[in-house]
Length: 257
Image (cartoon, rainbow, N blue to C red; front, side, top):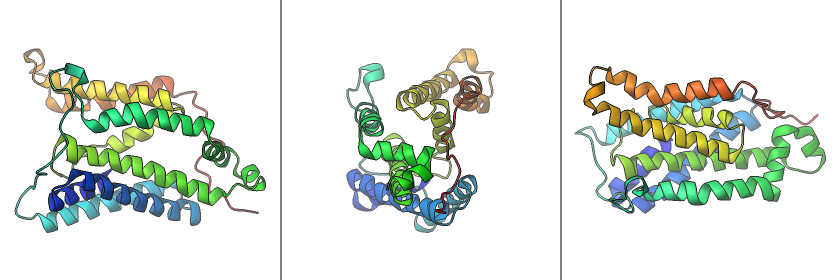
């Protein structure tokens, strides 16, 4: 998400075109996914360690480059995506929001449920030995899954700079990438429960902004209100995530015997 947020922001600032920003965010996501694939699929590094290391590397690289290029002060995107349907309350959302919920979520559900790629993806996650015996390229399929997921995360990061804020700061992501991982576990690797969890997080995130300007909650520390959506997700994960059945090959690198 950091890579997508920064690369998309940098491209939009340089060219003045937010669509090019999304395009370069996709490229950044592909590169990050390929790096994760190299570490976890090819080299067999523990996924938790590789994920933390890659995240720290990209955060540091993005922050360093941002400070190097814009040392005189914070830059802003001159052209960013505006809300659609202004004045219609909850329907007044950014284009990426509509695309995510009305296009990407149904498409991903269909791909995972009804296509050969989705079936192969399930197979290499549950039983890579059987998948390999059936002729499914385990490493290539896992690379594809990592790169596709990284692209979606990068585009989500670009939403923050090209739609929501229009600028880049070190805390722009604010842990949302880790929330995404928690939502996958909360949703038990199924698309629509994950979407429901995302809506829950989005609702509580918007709620804390409203509570912060409500006189009744003026005595509540702002840090506690900011933590509200994260606490809600943790509580939901603690309640509904206790009996989660993880994929059979979860965190297990595959090596052909």
